[in-house]
Length: 198
Length: 198
Image 1 (cartoon, each protein chain N blue to C red):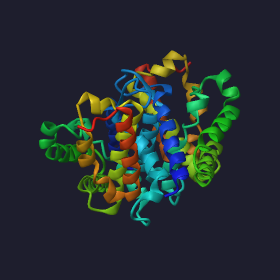
Image 2: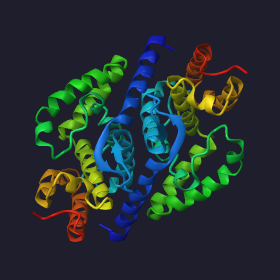
Image 3: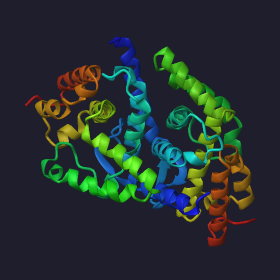
Image 4: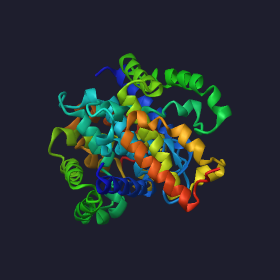
């Protein structure tokens, strides 16, 4: 056992524990509190397993999708969580997150640092089928949480239905069927008064 | 798209959100609060990826390990979390958890219910190499958290060093190298006064 190697890995494992303190805008289903990035990442990974049959690409590498989802938010330990509808916060988000990715993954031994940084970049770029499907799941989940919390974040930030459609349209790049599910969920939320049309 | 099938999957996804409210005894690294099962499961999945080179079986199916770790605590939504050193609570734990597994996984379409229940049973039985390695990671993580929280749960339940060695010895069935790491961590915790020898 390479002592230095395992020491780097252990340090990374301790460092990423901080993801449990990165708080998102979404509330958990029972509306009792805001969700954190660690539990969000867990939820996405399970969702991606359960819904994989709906990915546009039936032959995608689902294990790669799961790895991406497990680490996709780790950069927020240094860069913070920015709400999808926050125009100001999203301006330099990409630069901040790329720097953060370099910082956190470089705690790992160089072969693993390279592997996980490249996986994170792949997720962020939304070019491959794996990253498109992973991003669909990442957008579906907060919509589902809005449905069970009476539109908590939509109401808080005065988000209207056209913005939700615009910001989430890329779900269909990963899964036409999940996009169809999302449209049904949104219609039902509008009907219940959780989401305003204008 | 089979409407009934996706409805079952969506219901399961909403139901497992409750894992975020199942509170464990371990505290997160900064000692600010107790960890929940969802973020614990996320942490284990990432750890299993990073430490896979130390598994005794170099050819194990790591994707299967990750799937196991993602769902291994889901039964606690109905059965509750029982601390590893709680003798009374552990008496009927197995029966309660097997019933809970049947209840929660049966929310899924039958093919997926069967797949995930069988994966959970495999984890619980600790017979296959995948489940042995997954269980090693599940035991390593709370020890690491005890190290950064000055032995929070050991002190709370007056757990002494021999009990920790006894309850965690099966780590070596999944990874001799992780067991060796754990022994070093425990020795350091004893030295710092986080864990009493007797």
